[in-house]
Each structure stands twice: as structure tokens, then as C-alpha cells.
Image 1 (cartoon, rainbow, N blue to C red):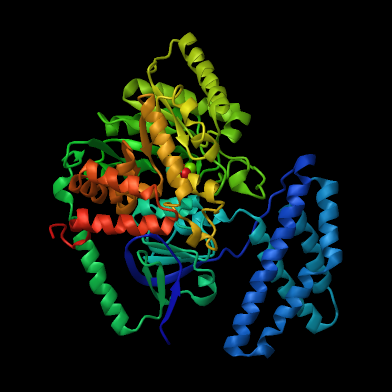
Image 2 (image 1 turned 180 degrees about the vertical axis):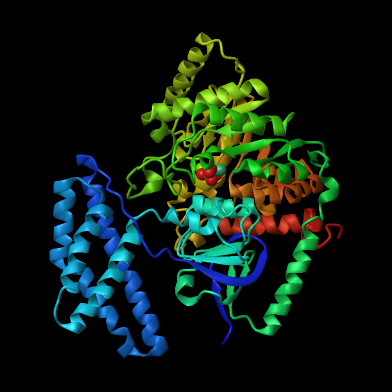
Length: 589
Ligand code: PEP
Ligand code: MG
């Protein structure tokens, strides 16, 4: 078979060679889920969106079959498309969503069951056989409607080492790959800073996302190469390609330890500016790897992963024990715990929350927490109690500005008062910081800096909200520009506002783990860099290789440029000149 190369979005570096395993759940089980009156339009829109998506998928399949084996074999898909356009069926579902106030998937699956039965009972043999086609469509529509995170158990039971190929994987699916027999993964959809990609990095799994139609082109057991650095997936590689990639894989293993010698040295520029290089933490199991990389603390603990892949919500005691352990394992270094940031591309199965039409602009993070004080309060109590056992810094995600920060702080105040009344120990001086990841927060940092103890810039979100680029959308991945002048100005503004009030400003988005951007951020005056453990030593090397003065001059020049591309080119050139060792294999040049 001929070698075929698919190009996607590089999500996590590394190379894997192995056998493909297509994650494609066959049965979609749909329990009833009652909805509120106000959710009816959302459910109807979700249903219509799922029909549209299914139509697109079937049309793509039809095109592929026509190209590969001829149009007569593709005719079956015309029948599928007709079913999807059946007005009676569509109207029946919409009417019942309104009447019964049940979720779109539940109503659709019950209406469809009747539909399938009509076909199955038909006398004509040909038509009767069409019931399996109808079933097939129903499954596709349901899959597009239902949270697909239900592959989790499938992934947990893998016996052989395999490369996972999926249309999409939720961040919780990816989390469930920890220590399983997964070599790498590749998905049809997704962008570079989707939480699925971030999770792959922290698990050290090579990953490519946004491949568009990998699941259509790859079959189970095909030999595939996943090249996470270049964003390529190679199907049926030739012997020549295989041997090239095997050699490259060995080279990467050697490179992994190339900056080990600076692990215990400070992140200090050649002219004496001391920075902190911290780690982002998703799963506590990552701590040993974090410590071996010489991180001087956790700059972002994404606590929402604690809530995923389980059927219940974690109670206060369970959370307290987990946070306390992280703090003790990291001592004497600080641990920055971010409160629950659910929504966007992160969902948990224990909460039956209807999906928003625009999840990143919907019920996310603090907006969710403030409406669910029961969940929020439990988490804050657990964090506060753990703060008695080490240095915790608390930060709130997606703060929109001063008013919201005050609201959430007064909520925290109430929780502290309760603990005081109950005589439960906690760190009364625990620092509380704000994540700057919404333009409205960045524009009000002069006010926020007077009330917060530190800032942490979340560029993954700040870029998506500033440039109107959905971070999980493969179509917009190429427009994701960390060096866009608007983004740079917001970062600069945040750092200046923080420094004016003498508070530290960190950055915990993917941006600071790229050497070229790290140099620029250093020059803009950033104090703390927080990233996936795998990037820590390289970024420390950048910092140790340059002077703050040179980095500042670069940043000043960058701020005068008019496009992101110009800034990128300038910074790449300058990094080559100032820190050529970053680019050599053994780091010694
Ligand atoms: C960010 O938005 O940059 C960030 C660090 O938070 P998350 O990626 O978890 O949204
Ligand atoms: Mg964020």
C-alpha cells in the first residue's frame, strides 16, 4: 500500500511508530435528562447542529467512496442524506423537545427507535434491510449530540501498545491515557492549545490534532507514524521512511537530557535578573517528573482534572487530602492552585450541564462557580485547609475585571470566616491572584493590580478572546498568533500595571514554553514562566544564555512592529544570535 502523509496541527512533540486503533464507540447510551424551559432553544439548536454535522460527515464519506471505488457504491449515502432531511422526523423531534422538556439526544433516540421499527416491520425485504442504514444514521447523529468523553473506559482497557486515532478526544479521555498502553494520538479536530493537546504534552505523548479526516483514512491496525513536532501522521510508511523515523526517534531520546546540567542552577540572565521557571500541573502523578526538571514550584495547578473521569463530585475531605499531598510533595516550593475552570472544552460527567452553543463564551469558570456555590465553596475550603501545610497561592481563572474579582474575593472571605468560626487552621496570608486571560481583565490591570497579590497571564485564552480564534478549532489554528501586536500590547500593559503596584507577573499559557516567545516575554519584564514540565530546562537555558538588557532591547523593537509575523521573524533571528546553543543537538554548540 502506498505511503500517505496527513498534515495536521502539532500538539505535543515526539515520534511514535505503531499500530492504529480507531476509537469509535458503537453504542451510544442516552439516559433521560430533563431540561429547563429556557434551555429548549439551546437543545433545538444542538439538534440542528448535529444534523448538519452528520450531513457534512456523510457527504465527505460519499466523496471519498466515489473517488476510491466508484459512484455506484456511494449511492447508499444519498439514502442516508434523505433520512437526515426528513421534515417529519425533524419536526417530530423539535415538537417533543418542547413538549417533554427532555434533552435533544434523549428525544431524538426515542423518536428514532420508532422510526427504525417501522422499517424493520416492512414486508418488502429490500426496504426492511434499510433499517440498518437508518440505525447507522441514528448512531452518527447521536454521537454528534452526546458528550463523546464516554470512550474513557475503552481507553483504560488497552492491552497492546497502540496509537489512538479519534475524531475527537476530550481532555478527560486524554487524562485517562496516563500510564496506559498508548503511544501517541491523532485526532480529526482540535487546535494547538486545546486542553487535549495540553494534556498530551503533560503526559509526554506525541500528538497531532486537527487532521480533518484521519479517522476516514486510517483503519484499525494500519502502521502509522505520528510526528508530533511537525504535525504529521504517516500511514503505511515505506521502509525508507520507517528507518528515517526510527533514527530520529533515537535522536530525540538522546536530546531529552541535553540540558540536565542546569537543572539545579537558577533561572538567571547573564546580567543577573532572576526569574522563576515553574511547572503546570494537571495530574498529581506528574510531580516526580516535575521535580527532576528543576521547577521551582507549580505556577498553575489545573484542578478541574480532579473532577474528571468519575461519576461523582469530589468532596471536601478528598480534595483537601489531594491538595495537601501536592503541597507537601512540592515543599518548600509554592503551589499555585487555580480554582475550577470548567466549561469551554472541559466537561465533567458528574454534572449534567447542557452544552452551550458557544462553550468558550458560555457558562465557564467563575461564571459557573458563582452559580454553584456548593461546589465552589467545597473547593475553596479544601484549598484553604491545605494551605496550612505549605505555601499555596490561590488564583481565579477567567476573571473579567475588578467587579468580578471583588465578588469572588468576598465569597472567599465568607469561606474563611466559616473556617475561623469552626477553628480550622489555614494560611491567613495566602496570596490571591488573578489570571489575566480575558481582554477586559488585561485592560483593567491598573485597577486589579491594587487588589491582587499577583497576576498570571493565560495566553491560551487571552489570544483566543483577543483575536476571535477558537483555540480548539483546527480551521483557525493557523491564525493563532501569540505575537500579534494586540496580544503583545495587552501583555505589556499587564506587566507594567503589575510592576507599578509591586506585584509579580507570571504567564502560564503555552506561549512561554516556546524559546522564541520566552525571549520576548523576558524582555517585556515577565517574572515567572510556568509550563509543561518537558519544556522547563530548555526555557531555563534560554534565560541563562542571554542578558536582560538584550532581551529588553528586543522587546522594545518588537513593540514598534506592525504584524505578528514581523515580530516572530525578529525574535527568531535574535534568539539564533543570542542563544545558538538552544538549537544544537547537545546544547553545547
Ligand atoms: C490559559 O488560558 O493560558 C491557561 C493557562 O489556562 P487554560 O489553558 O487551562 O485555559
Ligand atoms: Mg485559560
